[in-house]
Length: 196
Image 1 (cartoon, helix red, strand yellow):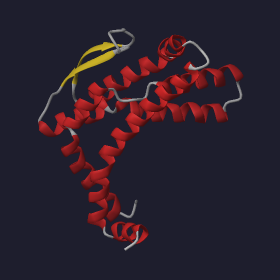
Image 2: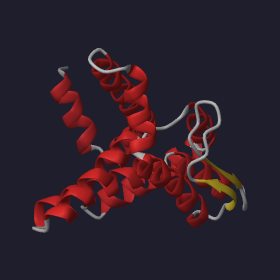
Image 3: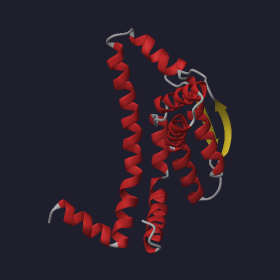
C-alpha cells in the first residue's frame, strides 16, 4: 500500500480521519512553535555573522517589543476566555531569558483546566498567526503608506515572538489528552456535517 492509498483510506473513514487529526494536530502545534523559535534564532545567527550578535538579539527583543507585548497579552487573553484567573501580566519585564510573563490559576473541573493549559500556553501561536495575517491583509488593502509601514512593523514584531517557550510547552503538554478528545469530537462532527 502506497502512502497515497493510505491517505485516501484514512480520509474516507470518518472515525479514522478524526483519530488521526486528534493524534497529530497537538504535536504539530508543538513542532510549529519550536520551528518558529529555531527559525528566528537561525536568522539571528545568520545576520550575526555580518552584524554584532548582541545588536541582532537586542533588535529582536527591544526594537520589536510590540511582539513581546502581544505575545504576553495573547497568553492572558486565552487564559481569561477559557476561564482561568489571570494573576499577573508583565508585558515587558526582563528576567533571565524571559522578556515578560503571564501567570494564571486554573479554575473549574479537569476538562476546563486542560483547555486553559492548552490554549493559554499556545496562545502566541494562535493569536500570533491571526495578527500576522491581519497585518499582511492590511498591508495589501490599505493605501496609506504610514499605516502600511506600521502594520508591517507590528506583523514582523509578532512573527519574531509567536513562539512557545519551554515553560509554555510544559503547561501545554498537561492539557494534550483532553485536547485530543475535543479535537476528535470536533473533527468527527465537522466530517459528519460535510464541512471537512
